[in-house]
Length: 568
Image (cartoon, rainbow, N blue to C red; front, top):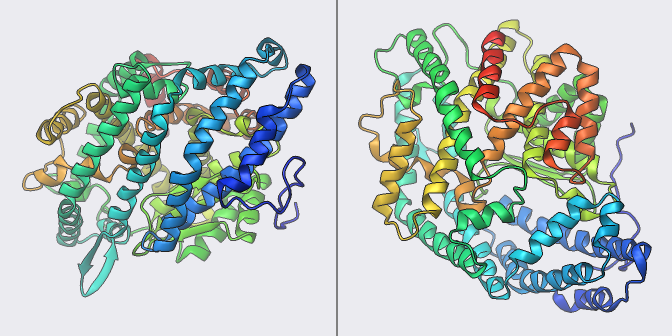
């Protein structure tokens, strides 16, 4: 396929040159939608297409503003542009979109929409109407602005080492050094730097809890957890299933984590395993150096994906052509990584903080899975169909991580290096599942124990962390760092309860990889078919299309852990 810059489709409802800058530009089009008399199902479908076109244009503008301010958190102008949208445009959007949802609901055509295959949309529309409360609009505005303070705090964090200023992402690369004393020094410097902002982050989180709890109470919920489950559209599982997942991880995964930790301790020849030993190279084993700089990471990632499926590489090459990457870590840049879809343009943007490690390669391939997903849904007729569920979005990204294991010769020519990347990836799957369970269970505790003190929250974190511990890692002298380890998890601050999806999707991805090893062509076709559905089907139906069960019971997790052990 030819690599060319993709242009926006010609608009039918709003002018092609309309720029989203203020509400006065947008309100005439919303008024048209609001006052249009809907005459039958065909007219409603055209009306929905017009609404989608307007919504997609607005979404693209908002997302670009978010991207620009995370790429440079110290740029006051970019922050003001983002905050203007959040405070001046978003509140009006919430109100008018609820009115438009009511218009659809009162049209008497919901059954007709379901007959047209839009049952998932109808389900979501009813859910939104049930949750909407006008008094929550200013609270959401306040919440969105508050959540961005986390990135600003984290973006300022650097340490000094050997006369050089390093971001925390750049510093963490040194935890893969064979010098144990260096690893200890870096680990302590990063941990102590995070603790410098402990009070600011704790106080910020207290404020976020209060706002979120008020939103939930306004909507008639006992707690924010139950409200958020409904807002996230968790129609296919609930609190009990999450608790079952926690228990399954404890029973089926922790014993494997213990074996991994013991293996690290034995191979390093240390009497006590410390947290700064987990990424250390074993004696005689070289540190992996998969790429040098962002340019090489992009080029090698494109080559890697081309070995899996040419369409995948075309997606990344198109993004590269359009400068839709910001990959390298630097001071003032927001934390973490993400793929930001663009509903109108259809070409996503990938953001991350790379420092030259194999973990960066994994992150890049992970976000590439999201990017491919964005391309596969870009031609769906309605923007709401493109807003895929997290459980399917993460299935896309985590499956891509595992598919790529068969194609990493672009990054590593040495067979031993390839084996190491595979074993590291599989062990990472095992060790990340307890962390996912911890983060999820901790959030359940937070929002069902409103009014707790910071000391009680600290104690709860320590207790839950210990519950999922292998018992092999020694944190003596580092207890304070461990007690606030959750501060590094962006999701808790910015996207609460969006985390167990990683665990659910990881199980699905293992099933996808198993299928891929048995029949690569068939597995990739099923993968693309499932992702191309967007959110037009239920989550279990999309997993079924992908060829894997939507199942996270103890029995199923146990079988998958056996499969991983065989592969290891």
